[in-house]
Length: 397
Image (tube, rainbow, N blue to C red):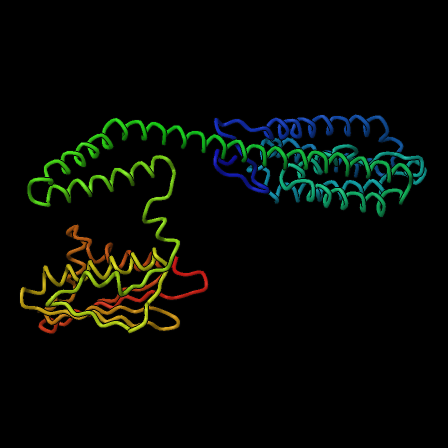
């Protein structure tokens, strides 16, 4: 069986807590197959002397007995009951029906004598119903029905009656199992939502009792201290207030300010402007370079990480240039500096040492956007970082 969070058209489902509605049905099918085998053996034992070839009948029933006992555990659930098992079951049923037409006397067949497997055939249809639903049950029932008509008595009233009963039973059980799986999947999702809601409420209480009160206090004290002193206290209070509002929005399930802004595309040039100074120059098209807000923000953050690397590692006298290219199929941003560069293998050593600025802040962001980040460097000739974000009808991922 699958776990509590998964369902499948042929795999079954287990509701949260490990319970399953269809498992009792599978146990009933397995029990039915054994009882149907006993019934087939008793029927043949009572009339085998009237058969033209009773030895062939005994051989078939012996094989059917061995198979039924060997496959009993397989019919414990949809995972063990593979299509190979069901295919073998169906082959045995069809073989038994055809053999019935060859080993029994024409007189008995014309008077409605049962086939060798008798009602054991219903167990096969029920197995297909449990595994694949009512459609597979209907397909298996149709194969058995055709075998009955062609191999045992033709389209008689008894044959048609038995085929209809077989189809109705199989399709009904298959439909019930499909409903059970859908109900269990719905129940599992509902329980998961309930658990997530309770966890969110618990976290909200903890945040309210701790973080929000501290932020509110910092905002208030920052405003008071900033009124007569340096503006640093007022700025600290303002930032604390913004974070408090963002946390309250997150706790209530409402959209954050950044999420509200994400509804409109943003001009990449505006986001890159703050990264420039007397050492860093920005060259961009004269028209807005519009990208979806999440993609523009992530691309700008990657450029910021590259600029930070220039300031930290290129030297105090190094200069850098940011070039924005707006193309129909992609937006490309290049950051080039005239610093000392780095030796081959330096990035790999930094990543192994736990410094993940390039792998996470730059390449990781571009990978999430479906883009690429390439770094080129020759010792003594600076570093060039090329960031490329593709455009598509759906936008970046």
